[in-house]
Amino acid sequence: MKKNCLFAIISLLIAIGAHAQSEIKLQIHNIKADSIKIQGFGKSKKMETIFAEPLSKEHVFKSKTPLEPGMFWVLGDSSLIDAFLISSEKGQKFTVSIDTGKITYTGSVENTRYHDYVKGLQDFDMQMQMLNQEFNQAQRSMPQYMLQVFVDSLTARANRVMNSKEAYQRKVIAENPGTLLASVVAISIEGPQPPQEYYADRTQNMLRKFFMEHFFDNFPWEDPRILNTPIGDNKVKEFCNYIYQFDRPDLDTCIIKALAAAKVNETTFYTLFDRMEKILGSNVSPYQMENSYIKMLRFMLDYPKLETARRTRYEHELTIIDKNHEGDILPDFRIVMKDGDTLTFHGIQSEYMLLYLQHPTCPTCREVRGRMANFPALNSAIAKGNLKVLTVYFENDANIWNNFIHSSEANPSYLHGWNFDQTIEEQHLFDTRTIPYMFLVDKDKKVIRKDILVNEIEDYIKRLKID
Image (cartoon, rainbow, N blue to C red):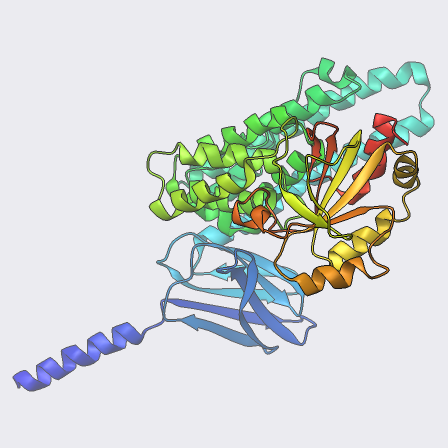
């Protein structure tokens, strides 16, 4: 009898262990597609497919481990049909019924409320669209002397709509405490409007700074789940994009302000830094902002609870990039030239110089050299003796060097050198992880522009009036 009882307990435990922690049923009606997919944020921190099947009337997604809380998409082929939220590792069992745009949830109060919220926002958006239509019609038909009075009235009505919208959003947050829904609503609340006089600034610097300073005003830093949603992820990407576009050193304070705010939750803090580092710090990112990234690294290294692995990596990263800034004198090194003469970088005299660190067979290096060969201002500055271009190969392969300098790819208008003793690499004189890597310097080898882009060369030459 005891053995039977023990067997029953073990069987029950096995059954419980095998029971799905997630079970999402999709009931599909009147949807034209070949397949149905569910996507969510994966380890790569982007939306990835976690479930896919040929279209049928019912699909059941089951997982023995709970899904990581966040936002998930339901797609028909590649078209978004619906989005649902998961706030907790518990309660991940519900049914979604999708029928020609009508979507209902059974077993998930949060997602029912989320869809009600989306519909509520659509009503406010419709009111704003109607006001825009009234404005456009008034512009076409109303006399100018009457238009200003009408616009003032229209602005007041728009402000009432926006105030009602925010009150509605605050109400939804208050009614759903602790949920991902509350955070999704919070992040969508618009920030304050800038003072009217800021619009008179033709440079738009005041507007831009105000906009960036208030960019994260309603961001729910205490909730790391928000960064497992496209809404939160896109918010960070948009912020980094503006930092890159505006390209102003004073906006770095906005980056530090965001990181400081994120420290309220360590998961949010690290995740935010990782996302921003990938965009602003990665040496392969087209949006790299080295000076901003240096400030980010210094801020992180001042964090008392910083993980040891992160501290080691950030310290190493800082030693690589925190050098050779604008105004600094570039380090000296030795090179051998085509004729066999050995020179030093500092020993080459020129009013201005473009230092071009490269690998002769690198496809991007070849492409950039080809583009530079057709730059009128650059060629003119070289012909007049106002500027020299020095290409430097810094790796340890004499055959590559010899093949290059005796080929048509070695532009005869440039100087070509090989750092034969590898001091550039061994002493980490420059950050050569990504090439070509170029510096525009003056006669004292003082940096005018670090990591100058190929499409900036002509502009700088004209600005310096050396063409």
